[in-house]
Image (cartoon, rainbow, N blue to C red; front, top):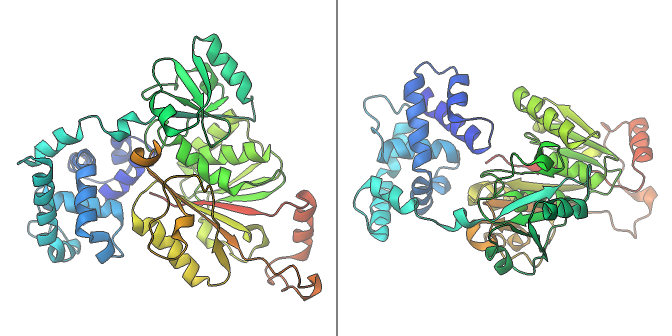
Length: 423
């Protein structure tokens, strides 16, 4: 039924901060706005409960083609909503029927585990302060417009107490009042106590600070800074941002490039690209070329996209993370390898395939950040012992003249790719 697919699309849009529930519902052109709005609101309200039930029941592992947001909407309707009556479930009803007993059993088990008897009581348990509510506020200093020392001095003049670079997660947990720290791992990242709101701060309004606020305001900034940092493009590189909007990571890439080189930013949503253009202009980005185009439609043999790939999602689902990386490596056997990164990072990839520990995971419980996943894949180089003349020739699609021009624009800097998986 179109209702469930549309609700899943709206839910995904809200979680990726493309708009509010109300705005996305009205933009969907779905005829029964009231019905759609109610379904999305209730599904979001029970989001963590549904995640727990779906994971415990193994629904996404059993149904590979079922996407997480649609699964959440369907399971809400089955267990907590009106249920599938008559033909309301459409082609999804037989699928849910196959898993109905297991899903209901997992919901019942969750109630027992949390000591409640009613569905509504699960929300009261969820409303208690948890790890996510204690996540510090991470704020990136935009080095295209200022430097970290100047930003620190500005906050100190406003009465904030600067505590220097943090040495551990315990330092971050202990932050209170008007104190702030420098992140222990990532440069140009300031850390403030939980609940600190900087959206109206003059430095943010002027583009000197970047609040990479997905999925919660500022809470995932540290984790969402990882893709650009791990890609580590030197100035002059050519970088692909495959799912670029809203543009926070794109602006981070531009800062690392010092606006020298080129960022090719792809996104299919024209509205999001327009908002992204505004954000990039405020951040002082001048090396980015926006494209309303599907990144998957371009030629993977293009010389611009051949070196390093960072795959990241704002999700903790194995199906969207380790399973995607494993399949990519299997389908491109011998072409790419996983790169071990940040050995001191405490939360690694799930051990579902050899080498998965090279991937990084982030969560409120383990890293004091929002939920995130990052994997760095690098094209296997031709052995240095092989003379250049014997190295494989570039594919026919790569025009020699264009290739020479790009090398001249970025001497010695390999093109790199940053791809973010959509949550």
